[in-house]
Length: 176
Image (tube, rainbow, N blue to C red):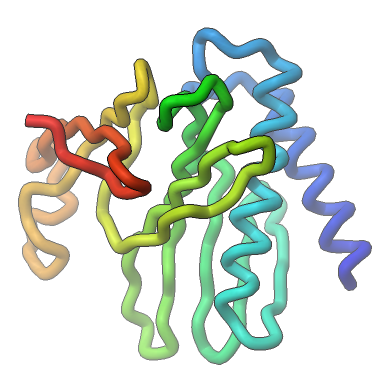
């Protein structure tokens, strides 16, 4: 099973890295981006699987990774990986958004901050509806809904606010 999951992961990375991405930093070359992208996917998958007891990992045809156990599932979509310079070094870091589905059907979004200190590691995992648009000049640009998840206006396209964050001590700090 692990061999099949690993093989599918390699195929996913190949497809992800060969397709032009809006999340690709402008100042990175393809080889660096591909290596970082694969490392980010590996680190995020390993971290999420470690949060569950006896996880089952599957990869869908569209490249999404689903990690399930104990009535809970994590959906890691390849399009929700944003790579760029976040901390003060020159290594490419990442923010990964994923969807959590609980046993009772409730869903919510979480974010992983992964820093590259020679090896990519998750340094923060937090609940947030943040949609990361771009990482540039050590600033994370994104959108947040203006209304809470129980509001009918939560998914309204015009009801979003643009936000900017900087990483401070492994946490995102809102820039006003």
